[in-house]
Image (cartoon, rainbow, N blue to C red):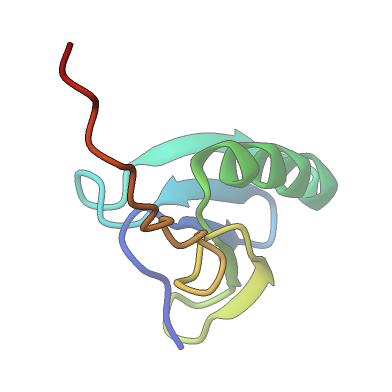
Length: 90
């Protein structure tokens, strides 16, 4: 599996962790953090609000999902098809 558009991606380097939004203006940089935990906390909060997943990579080729917040088809409630009787005319 790979990140989907609008998912968040944590890119770990030897000195920093960068947080990107996938598919947004060439994967636009959202923030940069010295600590992995700080980046992960920010990504988790943002993903929960936006209903997207968080992925992590060290090389840009292999990806691991870290947090899942994307709504799946089975998560979305089905609309009820309740039939109401026609209104009475006065």
